[in-house]
Amino acid sequence: MNNMKHIVVEQPGVTIHREVPAMRTAEEFDVSQMSAGSREAFKRVCGKSELSAGPEDFQHVLECILTRAVVEAILK
Image 1 (cartoon, rainbow, N blue to C red):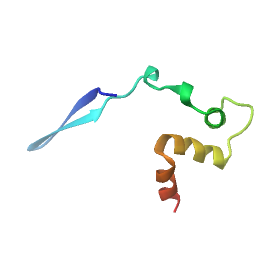
Image 2: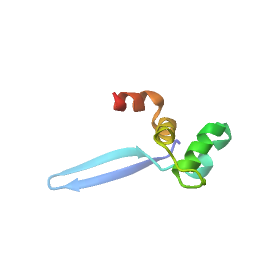
Image 3: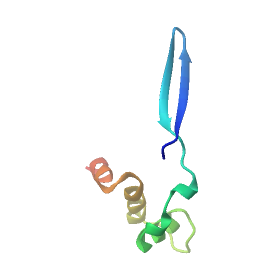
Image 4: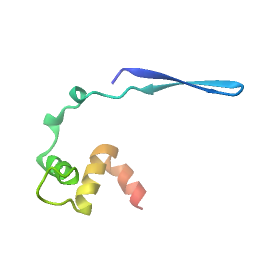
């Protein structure tokens, strides 16, 4: 994830330049390291399972993306 994207925002009287991380490709994610529980939660949340997702599945998926500490801080 070393690629950066240069964004220029022009407003009256000022130009803002920002460097933001470029979007990663699917090949940059190592899903072989994902646990079976995480895979199943993602499948239920994304509708790729015959089972419907519950609140715990959504929380698990968000913890995978945002980290558990961030989700816990939001839910306080």
